[in-house]
Image 1 (tube, rainbow, N blue to C red):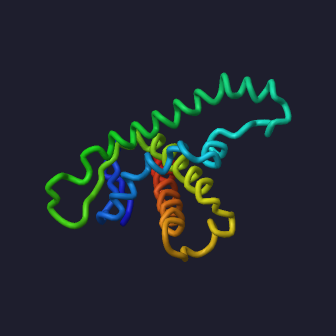
Image 2: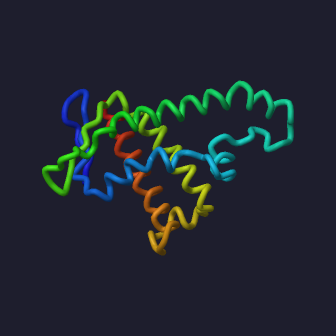
Image 3: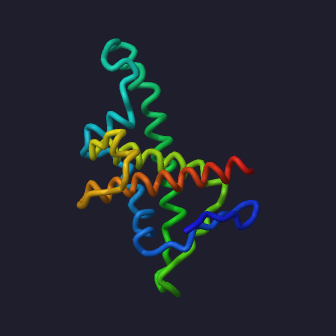
Length: 163
């Protein structure tokens, strides 16, 4: 799989197998902090960690809503970009996703949100994040997702840097 610039407005990601395609469709679920206090605290941390209740309240009132909106908007862009992907009648086992370059910043934000939420939800340590992909079960899949989403972020950042 590789990320290739098609023209001034478009990139292509592919070939994507059905597993990779499903991981793309899991971004919105992975990014959602609902049901996980750790994920919510990671995405919307207290700026003073409870040391200044007034400042924390101002943060909650004025800054956090903007973060929530930014994350929601990014996820909406991602969902729109993959709404009909892969096609209902696939021509092959592998697919190529075309994305507008103008949407890459939203993808970077959404992928970052998913990575942070997954890492917090599963309690991954820096050692686990930097180590080899081993293990089994849901934690191993979540760690793989974190790495896959990070790789996509890096690719998208390179495309934007080269613009």
